[in-house]
Amino acid sequence: MKVNDAIDIIRNKLTSNRFEHTMRVYEEAVKIAKIFNGPIQQVELAAILHDYSKNDSEEDLRQAIINDDLPENLLHFNKELWHGPVAAIKVREKFNIKDNAIIDAIYYHTSARANMGMVEKIIYVADYIEPQRNFPGLDEVRELATTDLDKAVFHTLRNTIIYLMKKNEKIYPDSFYAYNYYISV
Image (cartoon, rainbow, N blue to C red; front, top):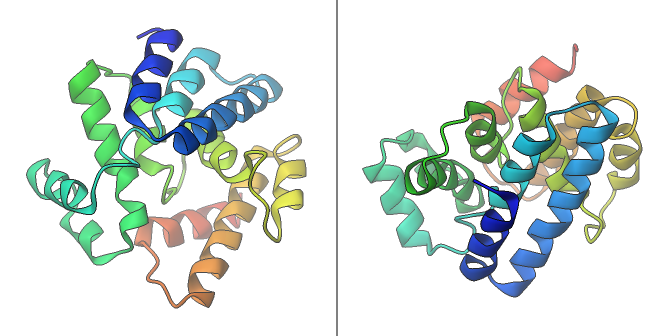
């Protein structure tokens, strides 16, 4: 799939605010990929398609999790987590994208996981630091995203876990596994 085709698909699928967010993530992801010599074409497609299912209804996401044999335990966690795995399945099936680096980056951009590949790390961090975001700890992650991608991933995980804990939200196990992995990298 070509980048312009992916942009057209997303433009028509997402709300205007979510589309603008997606384009900011895309720009940020390409910057990070260039810094760390990441695979630009994979990063571009993963960034553009990462929120493919973000505007799907809660019921549609729930049904996709059940019908597409995604881990059922997803349903026991915050619905904000769901759109990544669902989007990965839909993008793979609907657009015949078989590149595991792209699919994994879409799937894990909401939770992260231990030992992520380059594309996964770039999308995870780019989504967190896109220019319109503004919350405590962000400047540190933005700086790390120019010098040490693994540390940027770790600080993103740490900040996200702390935020979820303060809100008394459940934390998906993959996020804890990722935290434990990246704390010692």
